[in-house]
Structures are given as C-alpha cells and as structure tokens.
Length: 107
Image (cartoon, rainbow, N blue to C red; front, side, top):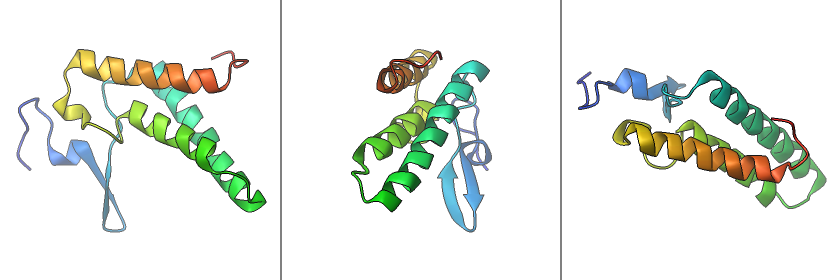
C-alpha cells in the first residue's frame, strides 16, 4: 500500500482480524511504556468481565480500557498523524491517569 508522509503504510497501521480492521499499537512506544499500558489494558478487560457478571457499574473498568487504548495509540488521533512530541504526551497523559487509578501500585 502507499506510504504516508511519515513513512508508514497501511500494513503498519492496521491489523485485520476476521475481516475487521483494528488500529495497531504505536510502534514508537518504549518497551517499558508499552508493558505498563498493556498491563492496565489487561486489568481493565478483566474488570469489565468481572463487573459485568456482578451487575455492577461498568464505567470505571471501561474507562481504564479506553485510557490504555488511547495511550497505546489504538484510539484517538491516529499515531501516524502525530509528531514525536504529541505521541509522547499522549502516552504520558494516559499513564498518569491510569496510575492515579491505583495509587498503591509500584509501577
């Protein structure tokens, strides 16, 4: 596919699973940042499943998932349209909000 101005192509931006297109994680994420965001994403998804079974409010769990996905670059402004500073601000802001959800975490 055609290269974008920043040198990425559609195969680097999108993952297709069962005919559905999903945005890929920002490849510029430092490994430790990606690990932390993926940890928050996993905890959020687990909470959505658990809370859904219990009939409790899903909003906090869904918020964690959304913040993690935004930090990863899978939601919000496309990472390939952002410069390096905007990308770093995106994941730093997401991590700050996510870490504030668990003030006792040692992340």
